Image 1 (tube, rainbow, N blue to C red):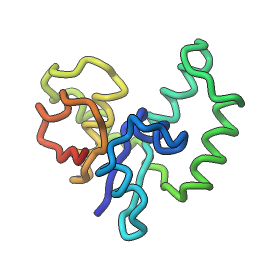
Image 2: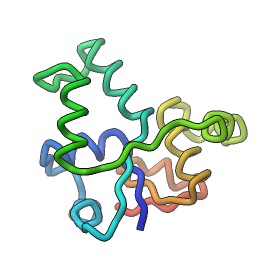
Image 3: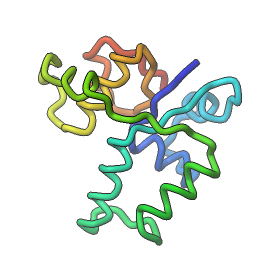
Length: 128
């Protein structure tokens, strides 16, 4: 199974946060699954660190590089298809980062791991 992590799910997994559901944690720990983090999530993390809304204990660049190497999660680039797919999405979710993650999951036909129930209003699989 290929899964895309919502930003909070990625951070919770990296920080061993109990907010991550047991089902999501099991999917992320299963070596048979391919786990992806969107460049959009990296961008969101960098913005939040820069605004002092998120503290990582180190710059986002080194945190992300170390976390991705440690977890062996892949990066999902943002393509023109992903960026323009946002245009056709209903406005159930207004957060631009989440809208891009939804568009990526839909375009790539992959599941998205997120605690955000509003994702269920879109045609994506959300194991949690």
